[in-house]
Image (tube, rainbow, N blue to C red; front, side, top):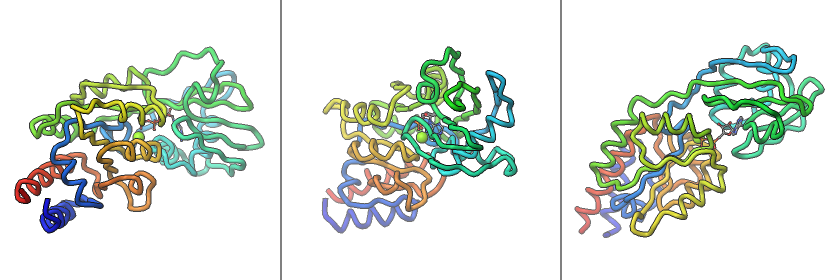
Length: 281
Ligand code: ADP
Ligand code: MG
């Protein structure tokens, strides 16, 4: 398309709070056939609510919440932020030797103990524990399983309509790529109107899922919000970062950034891209 038309399209996008970094992104977006989404914070609300703190093996609620929230202070993950938000500030303790394993969780020393928080397979792979059916983080203390904290992960109110409208706009295939468990993922997918659900994925497996989209189902657009999503945004034909501040890892890896906390901006982006390409013909 003519460069001047693409510049006009990009300008129109920015009026709708969508930053598009280059003209070719508009061409890809206009003919996109597959839309892939991260779940947590993208199809669902960008704040989770703590539901239950469930200690085990002699630990108490306050201790595991204090240890977990203290470790999560430094993490950008939406679960981490929601846990810190929902925890009394007096329970937050100093942490040393902090390490984050992307897509798994965080570990470090709190109160003289080695604490891990995140996926069960990461914090206590050998523990004989029933996995929560809801979104949850698990906690271990000095290698001993100490319990879990569950969250309510609620669909964004605009999600079902946004996905329905995407189909009207020509989407053939709508995927969810999530690191969360299968039960949570399927429930959210059903409520959202996603036809292809991939759960329990590590960041590398999200990239594989994007790369494996068949040529006849391309271009593929991936939308995500978190640091875990940065690699899959890069792997997609169009990567869109959601509700992000300019400096986050996701927005640096993205071809476009939605600057407001509203998933339906995807529909505006596709509509503007299609209009731009029509005018440019
Ligand atoms: P999604 O793809 O749905 O956004 P992620 O892949 O980002 O999910 O995370 C998947 C799971 O990994 C979370 O549900 C959580 O159990 C765990 N996890 C990842 N990072 C963290 C962290 N910083 N703190 C706690 N848990 C984490
Ligand atoms: Mg996420």
